[in-house]
Every structure is written in structure tokens, then in C-alpha cells.
Image (tube, rainbow, N blue to C red; front, side, top):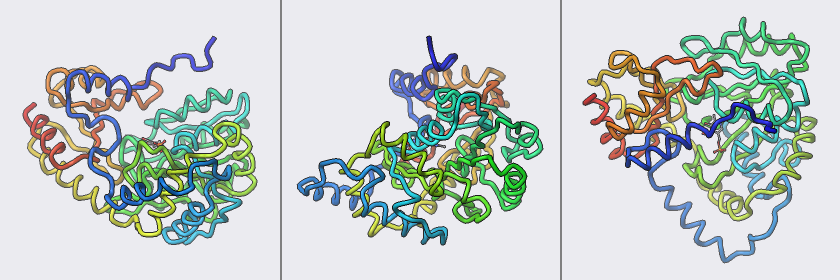
Length: 375
Ligand SMILES: Cc1ncc(COP(=O)(O)O)c(C=O)c1O
């Protein structure tokens, strides 16, 4: 008896294990290999002797919730209520899982746009829902004709992810206009907007649902401090949702985790008094350009990367192997670990494309680029 038929061990675990086994340079999993901010370490060190070691209120430490109110206003000019609209979660993953399990009932359909982040589908299945996976266009923009034709009376939710993992695509104004028209037509559909890479966009700014008055009353927005502050292992993020939806989410959250690590919450509430998120995109833009420059002479074709810390590369000129096989070869023969993007599709679409994470030190990036350029 299993609730998650056909769910294999996640590709991230498989590739990470292989990467370790073959001592490969790991550009597979999306986590930074550079040091976190010294100031964050200093605040953390000074915090542990304080009285911050017991349960916090269920929805989050008030001082951290207040900081999120400020951040949301500073970035998006949206005024949210700390008590009604916010919830601190154990990373975005728990936010996604809790939201889906609070809102999706047996038989409800949830539209997921492929390629898609791997936690969406299992979260829907555990809730008894039906994932309806629709492909994005070839350039990874949303195809609203396809999305609309997938809508039925059972459609409960649409999940969007912007900036997008694994492609780095960012939705533009037109995409949001179409989405607003669509959801106007189907007013009962809830939107789950995964914006964990909200602070990492390059040429064009990421458009947050926080700035779309027509959408905010039906949307749960997912953020992750792991991504924004390079602390993925802390597993801390938050949700923003309208009061009626948040009411349902909190009911599940309280029995899933009740509250999140008090120490992380306290440390972040102090750190966020000082930190601005503006520098993050600049730092990653430099790494992105450096990495692309180093790979320019290689036989890999570089796809556009508009946001996130991922770069897609196409290897058609080098091999006709399946992307999963090619990724395994890259680890075993060349010592570079990447993620084959077919795993992000329901039908395992093989575009001969791999995802590389450039949230790495310059040394790691140049070492990996040297190897890739020699292939
Ligand atoms: C699109 C997307 N959503 C959610 C998550 C999960 O974030 P967290 O580590 O905060 O749970 C990730 C992590 O890679 C992601 O890429």
C-alpha cells in the first residue's frame, strides 16, 4: 500500500550520492558552497545565550513576522498583516506541502506547469488530489491556451513558479495579464505562487504576485530565506496568503510542525534589521556572467538564464544519449555533477539539456567550466 506510486528516490539524492562517490564538482543541487554572511554568524553566536530556546507562537516569532511585513512593503508596496496573512514555515517545501494539504481535497485537480519543481506533485497526491501536468512552451513561457483547456469543474489550484526552477525563466507583464484574465474567468481557482528566487533576477525584474491586486486575494505566495540568504540548511521560509485561505493553512500547520525553530527565527529577526536583499541579484549576476563567459568556447549551448541561480546547457552537439545517462557519464568520466531536466517533466521530455547551479565560489565555477569546455 503506498500513497506515492511511481515516486522514486529524488534525483537530487541520487545525483548527490553519485557526486560524492566520484568526488565530482557538484553543480547539481541548488545550494551555495560559499560562506554565509559573517554578520549572520556573529548574530547567531551572540544569540544562543539568550532565552530563545522554547516554542515560539504557532505562526512565527512576532519580531520576525514584523520584519516580513517591512520587507513585503519595501519590495512590493504591499501591506500585509503579521497576524492574518503571514506564516513562518520549515522552508518553502513545508509551505508548499501544508498549503496543498490544507486546500486540496480528494479528487481536486491541481495544474502544474512542466518542467516543474519536484515537490508539487507528491504534495498533491498525498492530499488525494490529481496533478494535471501541462508543458510550458519551448522557451519555457506559459501557454495559456493549454492551461485553459486543462481547467475543469474540479480544478482547485494552479501552481506557478517564477523565477523558475529549473529554467531560470521569468514571467513578463503579458503573462501576468493573461493569468489575471484567466483567473477572472474561473474565480474559484486558487493560485500557489512559488517565488523562492524572488530576489535573484537579472535583466528584468521578477514580477511578484504581491504587486498584482487582481491576484492577491486568491494567492498563496511562497518565500524562502534559504534561497535569499544562502542558508538552505536552516530550512526556514514563509507564506503570505489572504486571511480566509491562511485560516485553513494554519489549521494544518499547527499539527504538522506547530512552530519553526526558535533560534533560526530569532537570529533572522535580528539580521533582517540590517540586511537588504538588493545585493543578492548583483552577486549572482556576476557569477552568472563569469560562468557563461568561461563556457563560451565549449560545445555546450547556453540557454538564457533570466533569474534563479541555474544555468541550462544543451549538449546536442556532443551526444545523443538520454539526459539522465549523459548526466551520469559527466559525473563518472569527467567529475561534474549536473541535473538532467527530463526529471522535471511528467513524461520525462528529453531536451538533451542539463541544469547547472552557479551558486558556487568562483573557484568551483572555473574548475567546472574548464572541465566542461574540454568535452
Ligand atoms: C522552486 C523551488 N521551490 C521550493 C524550494 C524549496 O525551498 P526550501 O529549501 O526553502 O524548502 C526549492 C528548492 O530548491 C525550489 O527550487
